[in-house]
Image 1 (tube, rainbow, N blue to C red):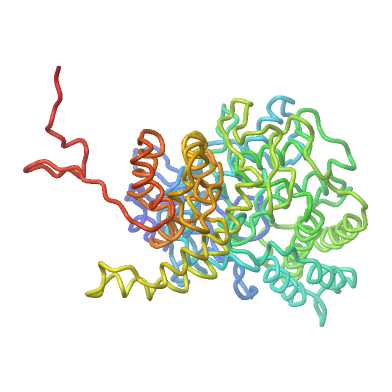
Image 2: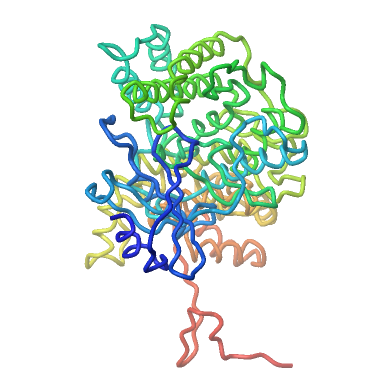
Length: 565
């Protein structure tokens, strides 16, 4: 049945193939995963990977191979994040007993041991830093742009996850099942009481979450130290991305390898193997590549949350082992003990006085503050270590937060009304509510943010010389923006661009911005008084006209006019 299905649904599948060779991968404790090897008569064997739901009774919403297929398909089609290509999803359980999907087999290296035993120190370092950079790439994906905007809720991720995994733990333990651990129940209570305020946000730091990101879920290039495939997306959704970061740091905290003689001590206990970067360096690389702030403020919660979730997962693995349907084989019999050790480790971490220094070490060019603000080592926001990456300044992050709140409170609720006005016979008039919103934006200091530093300096001299042309109540500082560079302004454009109405309300809409810059840089004093100041105040609008006969002049490459000496 599988042979017939694959031949019909996998492009290029060897056909007619007289037989299939199936080998189950031993790694992984959740969805059974197999290598398919098939060859047409006289042809070369081809390999594929099949991933299916486990047989038997499983917890509701768990083992969602359908979601794995959805996210892999989207990332493969629209992003550069390395994932295996998926070929088909079969939801018909009658084919092999449960739903499954088939994807490409990646020729590469898997490192199942967190200590990277047998690997050179230089290679160890490269592997861990490649993992940090790849996670940053995952977190920078625009979920809406790749069609995953309905893949999950961004807000209250930790709150919902604590509820979900708490229930999963209860379903896997007690009442004839493996015994419950009281410290786990206490941990659930602590987590509920200490969910970070930032978890309720839908803004910076929320987006695609892998859910099980770690080195042993990555395929590396056979000869180069780079990731060619991120695997095991079963727990992926949208939400608080710092949970991914903390979970990827588990090897530093605990060794949760399922074995009879495991000591469960992480790198903190056993010592960091030569070459593997310190935890702070790993975090610094992630923060730099993803433009995220240093996570010291809530790090204790995120580590405890990761240990809690791991404990709940292992409790489920152990329960499935007692029922005879654990996909990881006999190693699953150690999962119950490992779950309780993870709970103990979480409480040990919670009770520590210090878990992560408040600021990264000197020379690590990342944020020193929690998510509400950024500090960088140098005055400007450009990293100077040659990586070509940028971290916003504290000032930019504060403006970004203010803009996000302003749009949520004032602009988004008015969009329908403004749209109807734009489609009506009054579309050439300004909606009164637009003027009210502009006044509010001025009061918040969210006005003319586009103006570059050097342009503002020239105009400031003019305004200071003669204020007779400036309207009463207008502030020179307000009229000339917030003193941002183009790069810094770019972080704000990203937010304003989410609404077609927002740029004009902040007086940052084209073509006014370009015209104001021309006047700021090159206008005479008379031109600036007559045209620039009213534009800066938002009292008039401007146009940009560029036309020639018989030419679509909105595309500047069409211009036929020429000037010659």
